[in-house]
Length: 398
Image (spheres, rainbow, N blue to C red):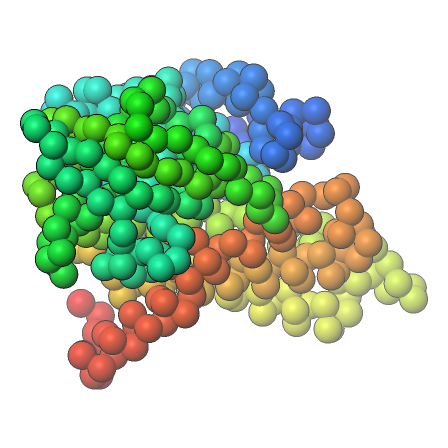
């Protein structure tokens, strides 16, 4: 395994780094650039997206033929880490969740006609999208086999009844991917569909208040009461819903890790900058052994997270699901992000707890990292299953 970047990817990474510092960090520092949910406002975002396009850095995860940069997953990892050095970075490059994961899975599994109608507008930044899978108890969460929302045959299409919740980006999305039960088969009982926000038979019943800050479109509860979907808007074959979910979530979970590493590095940079200037008892904080030890420990954890993320990216680029590698990265990086921002707040004192820095924003955002796309406990159970199955081969380099 060689984790060095190709000259092309390294050059693009450097351009993203420079763009974030020159154009996005100044906007991040302006409270007037935020919307009511503490995200970047639509008008400011549109302006920055135009600059990203002009700089040739738009949609790195998409093929060049569709207007992207055509990068492999390893290249995405290098760029996404740089993008999320700013809390607003990924959205500016069209690389934020849930659009990011939706674009990737549609590019992999949709028909050409479906790509033209449902995918290309997301790539172009003309619409946003959402992925509707999670349900209130006793419905599906980390276990899709518990899904209660049903899609039943109706003429030449399907009719959907059920309820979903915590659907990221739903308030403002136009294109939706829906996972629903189409049979009681334990492995092939789920199917995937596409629908547009203007279709009747569904509604957002509430935008669920969260600790925040929120992505664009929030986290919504949705009710389906007879939504009709033509069969041409079915993704893959009937019964392939679980497979589609696995295809999507593998890369989507890892792109979360890529972005979180950027936030962890930003948190440590803010801490480092402060302790190099702040004196206490006639000594700079950076010169105290206890402070240096804490910074070194978190820096090490960030590097461990980067290596796990890159190894998972390497495996995905070779065509595998990389379930074990992605689960390890998801657990370590989510916990490292929380450790990094917690330490940064502690070292900054009251300044870190205030809104004078983005640390309190990152801290609240970081708490969800151990929950979204599978709680840490679920991923550790996945790893234990691999250990039982593989024994000492769990640690194989291949």
